[in-house]
Amino acid sequence: MANYSLRRVGFLGATVLLTGALISAPTQAAGPGNGRTAPFEQSYLKFIIDHHFSALRMTELAAGTDVQRDPQVNNPKEGTAPTPSTAPTPAKASAEEIKSMARMANRSQREEIAKAQRFLLEWYGVAHVPQVTPAGQRAIQALTYESPGAQFDRAFLANFSNHHYLALDPSQECRVKFDLKHEELKHYCEGIVQTQTRQINDMRTQLCERFNVCDYQPYNPITRR
Image (cartoon, rainbow, N blue to C red):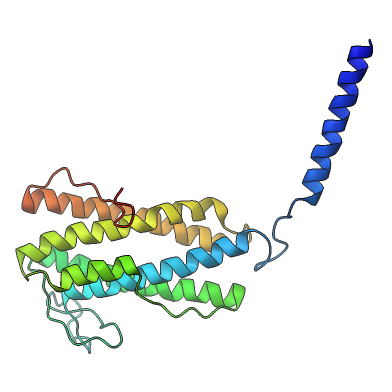
């Protein structure tokens, strides 16, 4: 009986300690910009803005740049809009499918940059200016010095796959770490995971069909994994 009483007291004591810990723990965000989700969201949004911004120059090198849109909406020779402070760039890719993919990626990632900037500004009052990441700079430099044509096509497919791969883990985290009031961010992150995964596998398919590289696996250029 005494042993039972001691066990019961011990159980009650542990319950009190646990309850106290729960009460003293940081609470869930009471509103956007507060709580533990805020630092994660701000960090993620800045990351994805810079990540996408780095991709713009990569796609410009593949598809070329045009200062002004051509009247023909579906002109396969049309380039992308140039990144500020960059010179006009002729297309280095030779395959029309790769140039088309580069144009589509350029346009969609410009929209995603704008949306992420809006989230940061509206929720946190942060106006983040995009900047090229170190990993992005290395990829851009590699593609800049790559010879135009088939050699560039192969290098672009591999480099852009790796670049897309960098966004997957942070965006997967975002799906379960966003502020519960920010459903829009959850959908944004889910869209990135789906789009980047699909495009990675499209590029892997092209590496196989065009260059007989059928076992390519994208990796993180920073960790080499």
